[in-house]
Length: 474
Image (cartoon, rainbow, N blue to C red; front, side, top):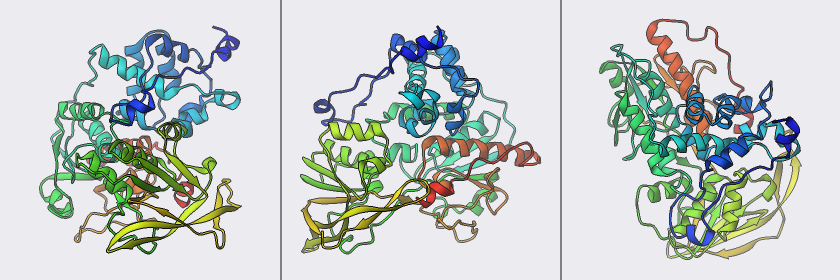
């Protein structure tokens, strides 16, 4: 097929559950491509000599490689090409914000729609499952050394996967009753079905990874105790599970529940009905997940307060689109200033109108309050979902150096902390970020741990990734 013919093919779109059907349940909203649609979309790829998409992918997947195999109908080979670099393709293909990563770098996006890379990756995974193909990598011979993994999110599971398949025995210690970290307790099932996470669990257990739930390292068991128990290295991937507060009067009233706390309770099976009128504060994917979850748990009128405009919302366009389809309204250029209540329970939220002021180097403009523009909104529940922080392990014996963002300070290449046998990665280092970025750091940490256990140089032949400083400062 000639380049002009490829350029003439329009981007293919998946079918979805209708809004009136999906707001009553947690079924997956987006369906995958069938064979014909996937091949047609794969034929849009120009197979660039210098694929920008690969640089845009935090894991650096060989995207042109698996797309080429897909369009040749070599689906199984395409899947394994993807798995050369990505240990959790089923997860990344569903929850990564592709428009900001691989698809955002796709050359076709310069003058039109980028290739639907995420949907093509998902197609390969779903095809393997539908055709009951073996999706487990061969395990390595045991090397007789143990590594402890603290946290079972994408960073921890990737680190454990790489180590286990190199012959090291891993034990994952998870403080929650469920496996998967924020993938399980922070992302609703309609975006990431639980059988996908369970499959990742099976892949780990298949190579001897032991998973221990309901134990908090630093509380029930100290990190130093892990060393005493024969673990020669530790990887810390505890995520960022602590909700950031608004810092306004009335935030402690009954009826105020913070975003990740609310999602955790619902995703762990607790029955929560917030009442008919719910106000969510924030503009990211967590805020949208909260709003869409509230709809599904019985709230009739859900809307979001966001202090900038739609253009500045950090949430993915697909999630914003689904939000609007489901009837959630967004009050742009508005911010809360006080929560009012009676007898200890909230009754309404006081807000102020905003306007965009000066912009920084990235083009992100600062919201500025408009004097005397306050207004009230009645509410049964208010869910601030503005960001998360790292909830550090209550460890007293070993102190790890922290950055100015209160995340773990690590070597930018090796992921090694200030204690030589402890490594860290994911949101605990980056702050709230994508599953792919967490997975990449888990993979890099695994390489460092292997070198550490073998007495080799941790940095030789490796280059640092671009720093995350700019994103954190936003």
